Image 1 (tube, rainbow, N blue to C red):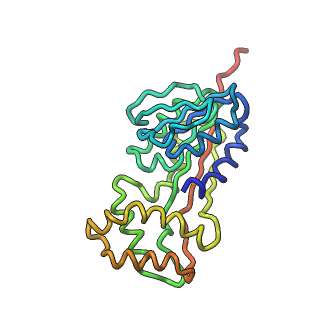
Image 2: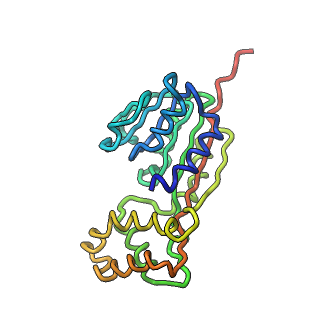
Image 3: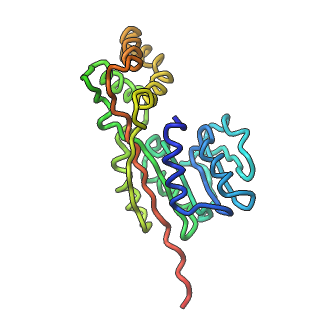
Length: 241
């Protein structure tokens, strides 16, 4: 999943002017792929803090990256410190979303940047030719991924606008074109949740196997999840006149 989304994320980070000596917070660091990239970008004079509740994949981050095991909703983050605060595929899992964004925003230094990316599954069930088995799988994933807001991406911009930041903008991108790459995000999710889907009676084992055959057959075009990226700038402290 990281390989699917990382190139677009790093392109935006480059556009934001993050470079040598920058201080960065990677919230919900996951496998650490972005934190590793940021460590290379900011160099030894910079700072990268990778935060996650589950830090088992973050043991080998290179300097200057540091790891903090914490829950964004309850843990204390350094206030007004970072030139970049980034979170991807995180806020849609946290409730209320607005509070999660406020806690991320509080860590942004004056003049610093906030970058939040979230998926939207509004059109996720569409395949050509039509195939009800895929729609059933998307519905099952939505049901079994407790607490995940599958359509939050399209509402993210409005919540960021409420923060009072400036230079707010948004764009979205889909999974990369090509059969295998378009199906890959769904295959990764099904691999993770298929046992629970069957256990909960949402689909039978045969129906899940049919979905796998569908995803590998190269006979259908699939709509991948859209990823909405919203960037914003915390206003700098006014200079004394």
